[in-house]
Every structure is written in structure tokens, then in C-alpha cells.
Length: 260
Image (cartoon, rainbow, N blue to C red; front, side, top):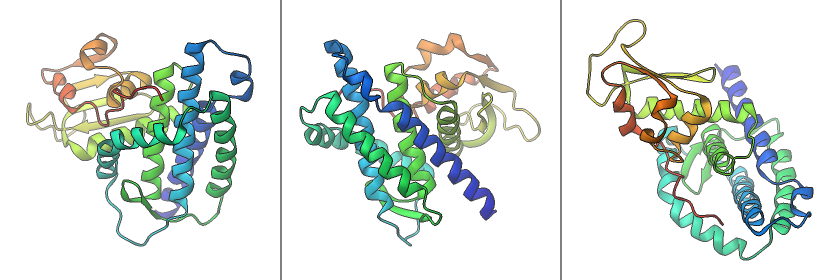
């Protein structure tokens, strides 16, 4: 069990590092005099990365023996803090250019990689969103970072998309435990859910209500970047109660963010 947990943590760490490496602009992207609109998007990517990395460094330095909250609860607390954190981030980042933020974020990324490479990481940490298992804190930060990449149409590493999908599928399963509806996101995850009290409870095999959708669409829907009615045509859906899935969305609403 301990070995599997360590493997899961290492996968999430690898996904988080890969995603931040992709999210934070490369130096050459911000030194070629980008157009004003491109500068704004590059600044947002660099700024979001800098905020996530600064928070990660502070959190990794705050181990605790206090009992952690569940992954679903941690994600809910992140959502509740979104507006306040956005205001703080905007104030801290000030009017720094994309180039300046990129330089700072790149230094922070190197520091975070060093910290995460430590052989004995804390099991639980005291975060801005309450006490959480380290793996859950990093999952939350990974989901946040991936949502920024999706918003900007920036390529996100496959490992980051996969681990973010698994994390959000786990959160859905925690919030809506049951066996009436199965949501499949191949090849990353599949989760069986209660269709909000609708439909029969299935006890063996595949439930009669099935939704299958691609990874990026699942992530866009569960993070509030897209609405179900906008993208339902891109899914496979079978069963009388598949529309119950819409009421479960988003898992965390990051779709209303303003650019930094």
C-alpha cells in the first residue's frame, strides 16, 4: 500500500513539474517583442505559474501532523478562496512585464523541483486552503495550472492532462458516490456516479447510463471553462439519465477568471 501511494505521489509530482515547465513561457517567447494581446496572455501564464510556484514553496515548508481533509473538501476550499487569491495575486504581481515574471517564475520552478526531489516529503501539509495530504495539494495546483494552459490553448504534457483528469474524476466520485452513471475519459479515467437520485442503482457490470468524452473536454467541463450544453455534441452519451452529469459541473469553477 505504501509503495503504491508513493508511486501515485511521484506521478503527480512529475505531472506538476512537467505542466509548470510547459505553462511558464520560455525566455525566447517573451524577448521577441510580442504584440500587446500576446504580451497579456504570456504575462498571465507567467504570473499564474509564479503564484503557484511561490505557494508550493511555502507549502512544502509547512509540514503538519494534523489530520488532513479529504481531496474533495480541499478542492472545495480552493474554489471558495479563488476570488480572494486572484485579488492578492494581481496586487503582488503589480505591473511587471511578461519577461520579468517569466524570469522570476523560472527561478522558482528550479527551487520547487529541488524541494520535490527530496526523498522524504511530508505526508500532509498546512496550505492556504486548510490541511491536506501533499498529494492532494499538488493535485489541486496541477488542476489549476492545466486550466490555465487550456484557457490559453497552450500545449499541456500528456502526463499533466492524465493526472488532472484522474484527480477530478476522484473528486466526482467522492461527491456523487453511486453506480447509476458511468463517466469514461479514456485512457485516463472512468468513474461511476449516482445520477443525483435519478435512475436505477446498478450493482454489477456497467451502469445503463454512460458518458464518454475526450480528456481535454472533460477537463474544460469540470473546471468551468466550457458549459455542458456547448460541448455535449462532442460526447458519446447513452441512457435516460446522462443529463444528470450537467448538474455535477463544474467540479471547481475556474472559468470566470480575469487575465492577470
